[in-house]
Length: 376
Image (cartoon, rainbow, N blue to C red; front, side, top):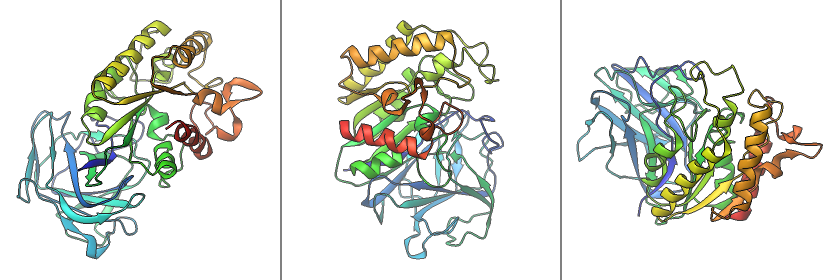
């Protein structure tokens, strides 16, 4: 039985928060991408997404291996990937493909390196903007190279790679569905300190991160992905092995109406709590229809941030009270109270604040994982 061990939610090519290679794509180049697994097994396969491509992408070669240092791979672990028995593959426009599974023993918590070689121009690349870990690019076919010397360019995004799956023999994965807080903004780059990483360490269960920085529950965005009510099936429900959905979403729907700092999302609609409740109910409906347990999280405090204002305060309080008290979720995790400053409950506790009064730091993400783990 295969289960997803790592995921990244696909996004439309765009400038995003940091410079990336999504718009230029790749030609006669190799991509080496490092991911941290949350479940182990004896066989591995990968999913590649061309969800936002307008033409097919030709993949000329691919490999996987256990990560060594930087772009290097442990030599004895490097394994060629095939697709329907062939070394080459075609990723159709707006679709994804899955590789054949290959023998490679991996354990939860270790890093896996996936290398993709494109010998023809890909065009703009479906990607995940914020990886918070290094990936690498080199010229020519480096998919069989164990050393990292040829990879002379560095990125902090993932491209085409949407999932790694292992034969874990279990179906108890937890999918975290949300925005930049779930994605890991504010955690230490390269250290795997997102709350998904912390939760996997605490529970021993596979944990999938389906967060997108800036994502909204009710509206699409050029930089911040499709709205949550539309992308849930692709990013969570269609992944193998998931039995629990954890929702932490809606803060940007509220906060973008208060800030002038979002150049790709103007004018932001001003939403009311009733609209957000309807969106949460739709996520609950979809999750339950797929047979999942659905857990709701209250929005974190964000007073003092650029998302805060009189209307944001009102709507966030109303939404959190509905999540706590309505009984519509199978279980509730009150992250708001767990991370609030005792001296001002509308603000993050300073010890958990990354510095923008919006995102937690490593310590805050650890607390989030601790509270959720107790509920699970």
